[in-house]
Image (cartoon, rainbow, N blue to C red; front, side):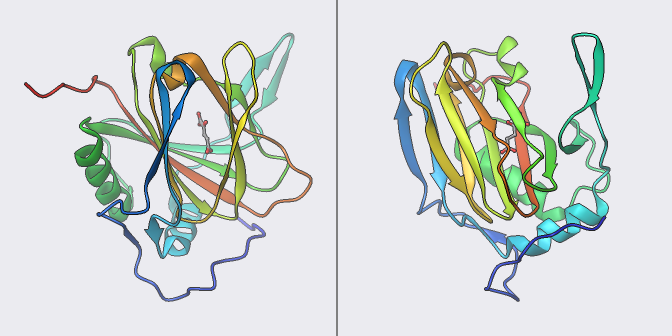
Length: 207
Ligand SMILES: O=C(O)CCC(=O)C(=O)O
């Protein structure tokens, strides 16, 4: 696949998440939702971007819009629970680290490839909310920066995160119920990939 993107200036770094989560800051949102953001959390993320672009099982999904069936404006790849075939080792390591940090067993990995500024995902809350009151959704951003917006479901001012290479963003609390998120189209952008982690069982509260 031929994509336009510019790698980081820090070449030759080992691909490694920050197990200390030292740069991770929580933003409390209205209605019991929260977002954690850790800029540059995955060092050496360019190598993972390249590996996933080349090896992930990319699919072109389609959506029915009224009478028409349209291509989704992005490519996706998916590893379900218990299916790690071809999953890069560092992604499995990230999943373990996030599971320990957040007290849930992240078990599925979804990747989204935004080839340029025309690719996007519209406002939505993740469907995992239908099964859980407070699902966690973790996203590691790779490749070129892209805007990630959140807005209260039902209206209100949006919040903007400019996700750069290696950033971690985690949505929690009621976020999938009370807020919506999107990656809007932009006039110009290089390729960006998001690696998303979800879980099937709710968190078990200690004690
Ligand atoms: O690519 C992203 O950062 C967001 C992905 C997302 O919202 C989704 O796949 O449901």
